[in-house]
Length: 224
Ligand SMILES: [Fe+2]
Image (cartoon, rainbow, N blue to C red; front, side):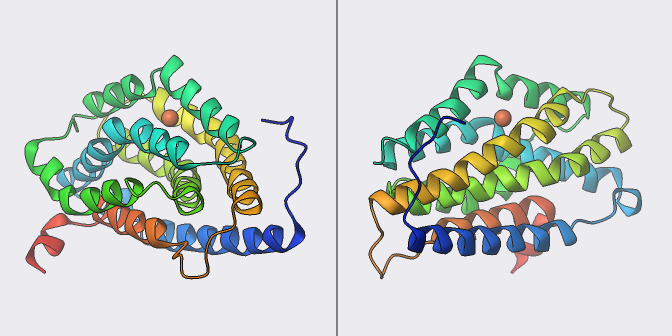
């Protein structure tokens, strides 16, 4: 990842920096919405861990793979592959499952269905296989996950769990991953500029909605 030598053109570079700032501001908003674990019921804490697990366990590697299929720039692909390599070699889904079970928050059918509508929209979006918007969505995802880890760990601790391998690993390694993905966005954009009518943030918005469903009471959304 550190051997990249191709610098993007300056116009794409500054556009990339603007996109990154926008994404990071959206993450700040999400983090600011997080309810205080100490003022939540055990069921509310369990619900967040369970819905997070229902989304991440089976989809993170799938979505990163979809992004790899969508990306055309040869320089961008190794960044995604390295991420996937770590996910598979260290079996991050195993870590997440252990984390959820230890917190007594393994997802039920209700948890899986609470996130179903928003999850389907993100799956359909990534199925369009658009390089830059897909990469931007995954850069947003990685950056969010890294910021979210200490909160997720606090929820699990409040549920009486001390199984923290998942949150320990992701609070650290995703810093490099999210920076790499923002670099991949710039590389892809410089090689294959997007058409002016492309909505760069379509996937980011859909994923943000999904994350909001994870962190909010799903009954509020189902009733709406
Ligand atoms: Fe991971």
